[in-house]
Image 1 (tube, rainbow, N blue to C red):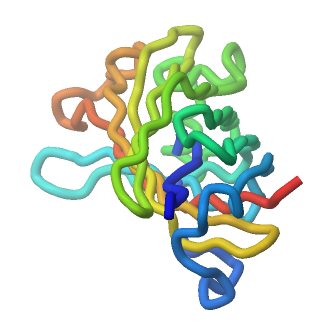
Image 2 (tube, rainbow, N blue to C red; image 1 turned 180 degrees about the vertical axis):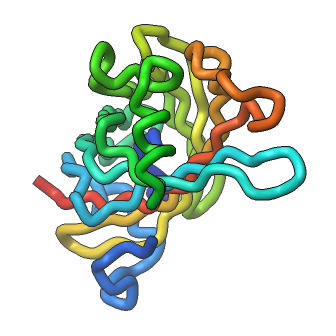
Length: 194
């Protein structure tokens, strides 16, 4: 039986608030087929390591997205995701202001970061890889995210999505090499069937 593997989006980041005990694992692709909205209960987390330990840990509290799982071919599925840099949260006001500033996200000039899938490839019963175009600060590059199915029921589906993005590609490399160039995303994405 063919299994569904993925969906995001990245683009990318706590716990899924729906109890995963209510989900079944690895549904048939035809069961999971449909269009899903990314729920506000999803968690979009990121981290940037620092030489010598520590670093920046944060999350985005405002985002939106939609994905469509094709019932016959996983590779025909699509994902679109938007996050809003003004919503960045690190529990440190000074750091949040810095990340929103023109040195990093330049959130006033570029209020969104977007991801649009270009390819979805199933890699296991409950895993997939998603390639797509990430746009931040008006710059677009191809990025890749790994997706693992966490659970599924009739109306909801949950994934963990991880990926590394080089911030220098988007002119956000202030602070290197003290802060590493890689931004690590770890996202728990819940989709609600439409």
